[in-house]
Length: 135
Image 1: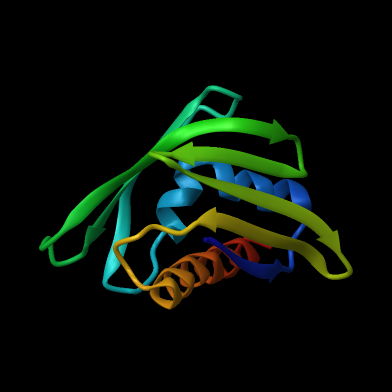
Image 2 (image 1 turned 180 degrees about the vertical axis):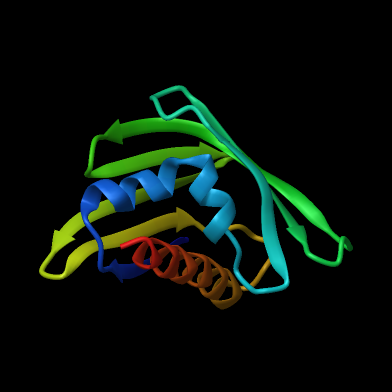
């Protein structure tokens, strides 16, 4: 099943894309709630390039790595990647007051669909808040 989340980001597309693909920014926004954070990130933004991030509970009770391979990139328009046996696409669409960022991904089987949607939407909301704080 495919899940899609989106957010309107009130910022120039160059800044939106940079914040989405730069490790220094990723560690600032990549969490679904305040009790989690991303402790490290790496990005090799090219087709066939790898990415990874380490997400951890702030109390140290749990953590996991999120990693994959970029499969298709079109500057300022979209990024596609695979992670495990799943895929994700990220679209950057110019809008009247900034950029619409739309993330579509294949759901996993372990957690309920709505929980996955809420988690990815929370991360995308944090992303928008981070980027808008930079303008």
